Length: 383
Image 1: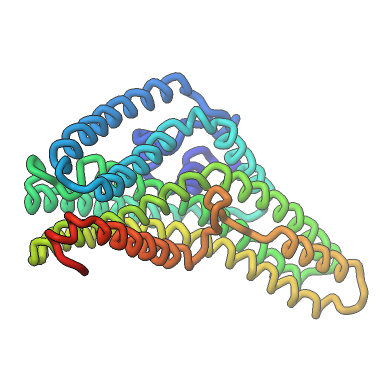
Image 2 (image 1 turned 180 degrees about the vertical axis):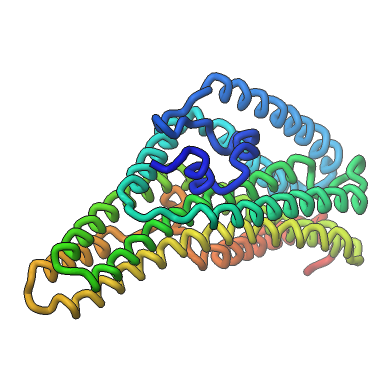
């Protein structure tokens, strides 16, 4: 078995302790693949939820009631839905060490089982350079988020009316951390398919006995990896769905901001526009990185299928190896790699564009509903 610290880094990426402090990664004993410190995790999660919940209540009662009391209910619904989605995602993340304990343990057990069946391990020298780059990445992104929040305060005078409330940036940062965790797990899944592909390529230059052994090992590993992907979808699928919904609501909220605040006043808020655009672009980027890494794992499985077809040319004599290769091809076709967001949609490269397209449809519906509001039309004219 791999050593504990390298295995944690390999599965979740660097800064594991930071992720544990935010409640994103649970404490687990990698020797037994069991979670520990569950009581402390529950207490810590409850404290986080109480603090964030009290802040949400203050926002809903004070901000929405005081600042939006004269507005139509539609802008309020959009903003509350956006905040509520972030709050639900936050609750799911900080409590999943307890509520999804069996899934976490199952994920570690299945990943460890795949590790133990490998004969070649990655050199540790590569890990050190990855750690340095990733630590810098975390620091830079954290600094950018703080800078964005300071710009929000400076431009919008948060004590009067902030464009994005404090908790919006908390959920924003959690999206960033979640994209790293889920992305690293997806990368590790992709590396396992790459390992199988390289093993099959090497089997072309071995004798038939070794070739048969490699084919059998590959079939067994492929079955194990399908179990890992099933656990991945059950564990991270709902979170990916919430991340996608929140991205859509952020874009819709931006459209509401333009319609309600910019167009009626016949002026363009360049500073607010800049902050909002950066906010949305970064949010979409993190979700896109996650889906891209999931797609990379799927591409590696397709490369594995391509190598299998190439092997058929070497085993064209009706031998047992030919039949074993056909069986592996059928197995890959019948059980393809598929990442889903709680079975609502598949995570693939076009997901981000689908989110943007769907949000555009919702925005058109919003404008139509607001156009039917006679008081809004009289004050602002038609668009």
